[in-house]
Amino acid sequence: MFDSIREDVRAFREHDPAATSTISILVNSPGMRAVWAYRRQHWLWTHGHRFLARTLSTWSRHRFGVEIHPGATIGRRFLIDHGSGIVVGETTIVGDDCMIYQGVTLGGTGKQTGKRHPTLGDNVTVGVGAAVLGDITLGDGSKVGGGAVVVKDVPAGCTVVGVPGHVTTRCGVRVRTQPAHTDRRRQYLPDPMEQTVEILTARISQLEEQVAALTAQAAPSQDVRFQPDGGEAAQAPSGTEE
Ligand SMILES: CC(C)(COP(=O)(O)OP(=O)(O)OC[C@H]1O[C@@H](n2cnc3c(N)ncnc32)[C@H](O)[C@@H]1OP(=O)(O)O)[C@@H](O)C(=O)NCCC(=O)NCCS
Image (cartoon, rainbow, N blue to C red; front, top):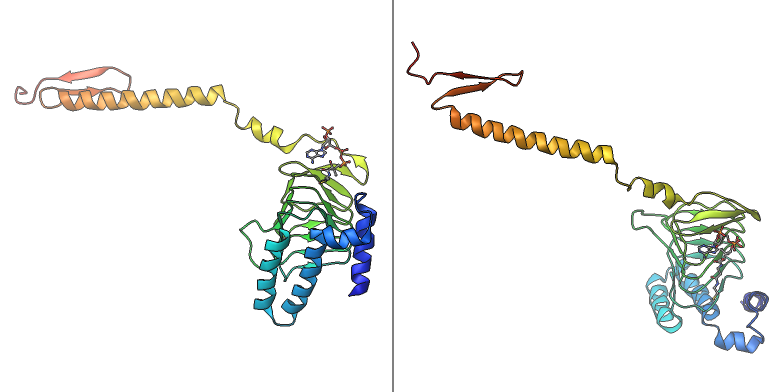
């Protein structure tokens, strides 16, 4: 256990320039303490004390602002910087040397059951306020930009930004793609032909109703029938017929 704490502190010092002393990290790092609390709760969870584990994790949430479900599987040297507003779902799997910032959600989409939370490979970074949703995989070394919403797998070594998340860098090389929303917006542009057809269709229905009403009015006294060629044939009122 002490080895694990030691390597966590070392990793924290390497990643965070503001972390200057070990004692300061131990006392003033809610993210780190939340992870240590999670490790104890995970042990309880996997040894059959699920209610206790869950209750302690709720307590940790109040204390550190970090909600890690005790059923989640988290690798070594998992760093949470600032540690506030973080949610890690029950079936999340996190590899080694991953780092997440404040406001990150590793959650479900609400549509899946069973394994419904993400899997993070090794060396994955998830930026401030990002949401990684569903049973998707973030490959080794991938990065999620701050504020991104990721709902699809991210290949190893890629950086994803935006809503919905799209790849901007693949293994250090910039990827220039049109953002997905550009194409999507096109379908919302007004189509003049479609609008004209809709107006004409509505006008034809209106005219058909008027014709039906006129026909109904004329029927008792005069049998008026519209011919298919647009003309009309008026017949003498019934009773005067020979
Ligand atoms: C995504 C990130 C990792 C940078 O990755 P990168 O591959 O170096 O990306 P670049 O800086 O080269 O930017 C690539 C493009 O993505 C855009 N971009 C970068 N970060 C973005 C973000 N979070 N959201 C939306 N777009 C972003 C850039 O503007 C650039 O767009 P362009 O192609 O139109 O110029 C970084 O911007 C980030 O978000 N890090 C999170 C760090 C964090 O959470 N810090 C909290 C400290 S408290």
